[in-house]
Length: 194
Image 1 (tube, rainbow, N blue to C red):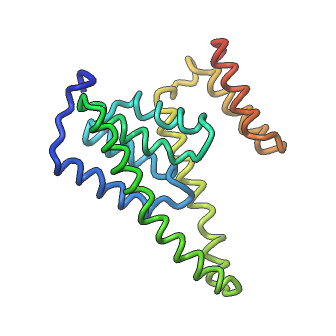
Image 2: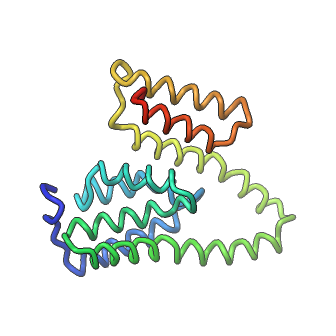
Image 3: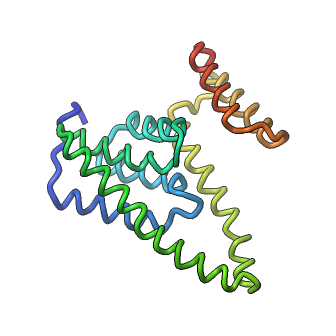
């Protein structure tokens, strides 16, 4: 995209965006953030509806803000609409992405939770819950990899890599609240250390 208002979208594009988020909703095992790599592939690499910077900013802002982190989905929809040069289209983007992401997964979660609670003593239910953990972890690692792709040169970005390693160790070995870790990272960024 060359400019903020250079994106032209037809109604079929909006329908395609909505359908993509409907399908991603059912793949969001571990939360919407686990589908971020596919969102990046679709919105940035294939459709060119948002920039890499807008994608990363959407996730960073939603993670830093209080409230549910699924709000990054709304921010991505907002960026798609705003890139057409229209605030109403930004609101349409928010509506389509959020409803697309929330409707199927919320319905499925509600029905599955009721069934799982009724059948919690079944071996298959317990095995399913334990088997999903590695999948969620792998999807979160893929999301982290996408978000750090701009900083993948350890020789020039060594401070970021060091901070990442220290943060991982602290999280693994202590019970320090994650908000403290976010605060430390924000301060280091504020002072230009990373």
